[in-house]
View (cartoon, rainbow, N blue to C red):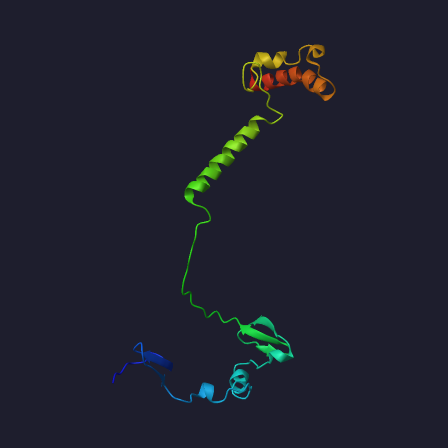
Length: 177
């Protein structure tokens, strides 16, 4: 003979490898399994007291709506879930989107790509002396040289011919002349 405490209600099996026995822990005929027929009789009073209802899936799946704490929680073809703010956070799990080294690599790569593309933009041209740079005061005055030699056409001629005029205005405003 042996005895053991059962932690929960239900059926338990004990075996020694050769013989086995099955035993029931708890009441032999509990209320929840006494009458297994589907019926609204047991739940209807509780559901009605809380503003809800009992609906059968055979009549169609009811629409689920969010309702306020004082509103009715049921209607024709719908059931309501009360928004009463009663909740408890039982667990929280956070994961990083990317490892830190990969995020840093992507940021640095994007910066280098932007820097490279900016250097190739149409407004900046590399000259014979290297990368594009601002013009000095003397170079700005000579920028409109003979247009026939530059091959400039249309809008470029207007820009090149206007450059000395704007250079003089800039110099006047800056007090250089």
